[in-house]
Image (cartoon, helix red, strand yellow):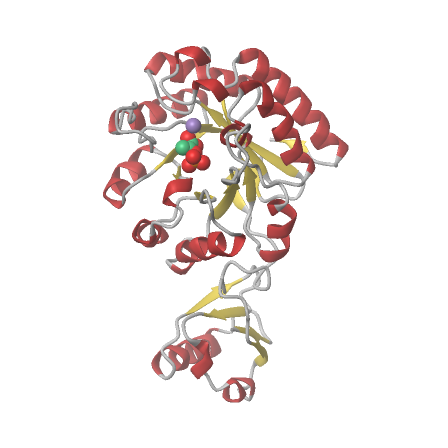
Length: 339
Ligand code: PEP
Ligand code: MN
C-alpha cells in the first residue's frame, strides 16, 4: 500500500500514521522517494481500513499495490541511484557503469595486474571473488579472508571501490571491514537467511539472478534486502538455465526492459558468466549496453589460462580493450557514457 502525503516531510502526520499502521494493523511502513511524501506499507495490508486513512487530514491519496514486491516496485519511485562516487552513479540514465576484475583472487600479483587493466580504462569498481561457490568440492574454493584483504589493498592502491561475493552471514563483519559492496551470487539468490542478514547492512548489494528464477522471484529476493532496510540494491542478469547447451547460460537481455517497467532498482548485465567463452563476451556486453543496462560486470585477467576459476571466459588485455572500445561506441550511439 502506498500513502501519499500532501506536504513534504510532514513529521507529526508521519508519526501518527506509522503508529496507527504498526499498532492497530501490525504493518511496518517505510518512508520512500526523494520528497519524503510517500509511505510504503508492507505486511498484510488487507486488514487496513483504507477509508480511515483517506479521511485523515494531510493524506493526499492511498493506493493498494497489487505487486507482492511492494518496495521494489516502480510504483514507489522512478529510479534508485547508487552513488559510488561523484562521477559514478549506478542508475543514472546517462551512464553505463563498468565493474571489472578477476573471477577469483588467485594471487596478489594477478589481482594487482587485473586491477591495473581495469584502472587503465577508467573503471571505478573492482570485482574479485574471495569465497567461490564452485560446482564441485575439489575445485578452488577461494582465498577467503586473505582475498578480502588483498581486495582492500588493490582498491586503495588504484583508487577503486571493490565488490566481492558473500556466501554466509558470518562473514558480514569481514566484508564490512574490507570491501565496499556485497555481491550475492546466483546460487544464493534464494538463501533467505543470507538476504535477511544483508538487509540489515547499508553497503550497496548486487543481487544476481538465480539460475532458474523468474523476474518476480528475483524481485521478491530483492524485496528481502529492501524490507531489511538497505535501499542500495542492484540487480544483475547473468543468464538463466535453459535447454541450450552451446552457451554457458542463456542471457536474458529481455529482462532489462521488462525490469525497467517493474522496478526502480538499477540493472547490471554480466556477459561473462552467461557466455562462458572469452571470444563471445564482447558481443553479449554490447547487447547489454544497447538494451539499456545501467552497468556491466565483466571478468578480466592478465593471463586467463592460469586462472583458478572460469579461465575460459576471462578477457585478457587485448579482448578487454577491444570490449571497452566497442562498449564506449555503443553507449555513445544511445546517448550514454561508459563510466
Ligand atoms: C561470479 O560472479 O564469479 C559468479 C560466481 O557468478 P554467478 O553467481 O552469477 O554464477
Ligand atoms: Mn566467475
